[in-house]
Image (tube, rainbow, N blue to C red; front, side, top):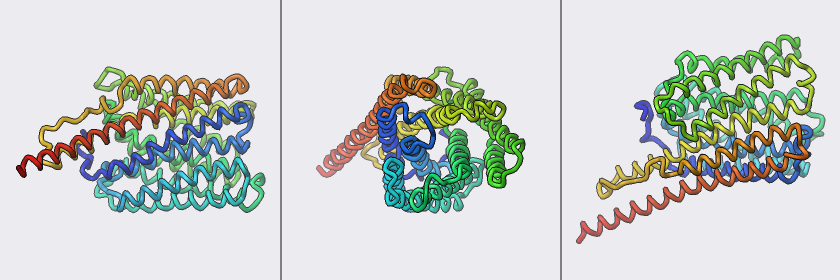
Length: 445
């Protein structure tokens, strides 16, 4: 355990779990969409089903887990609990879930009224999440690089939402086809880098050393990376909006790619120096994420110097798959397989410590909450699905539906593993409560 963690301020376990268990369900929906549409989904990024599929992944899986993780981590890391966590998390979760489904339906049906509903629901989710988390961060008793990074990531989410809601408003109230490509590029850049990339790096500062037994990230990196990413992304955004020279935009894009590559390279180096040399499945997920992040940056860099590749429709799909399915989704899997067992153990341990009748009661350790074998099988499914989806960009007719089936199996397995962890928690809580009742009855007699 790290001594700076305020474990006693952790919210009720249902707060993060409602977000975590929802992510595989959206993954199943996204996989079914890939199975149904097949090659059509990989022809152009402007295809309505492709847009719906992308938002099922970015909002329903990635943002869903990241919101749940922040509800859990802010009280523990920053020592600043969110006010009314049960109510705030419930409203945020319901708004985000229904808003994501409504937005995907809006892309498929092209109904302005559906888009209007999605705008309202998603704006509500982002507003409530932003106000509750940012207010919590303002009250943080200790300011550290992680807190600064989280603040910037949350601002990145708001900027991403602002661009996204503006684009959705175009579909709802004007001609969606008339939306500027520049606005879409800004929405993607802030979502990928300012929100998901930034937060993944900040979370890594905590969970990689804690759960993988690595040395701490260098202090200079923790202090500067968030500022560098945010500042470079802001300059790039201003430059893109003001139509500067191509050379300046290319330079800023190379700097962004270099910053992300630096983070991935240092993470791989720290994992190589870990104190516990036995490799586990979580390490495999994180290494997959770091390698694919480097490949995404390489793909991005090549596009700047090779116009034929940058103009190829397959380029945007390769970049998106490497970053979303390769980097972010792999890291999310690795996070869940450590955070969920840890939370089950922590809350059971807190229940034991809270009652004298439970002194000496044994609870499952983290390894028994989700078995290593179950995690390993899901990892290989995830890896094969990722490789199949990348290959499907070049051979869509042959491999797109196979990739969808593999991702479907992977998300079903992930959901089953998380449900198994929840079942163990409920069973153990019932056992402990029965022991308390038996102890009280004995004392009365």
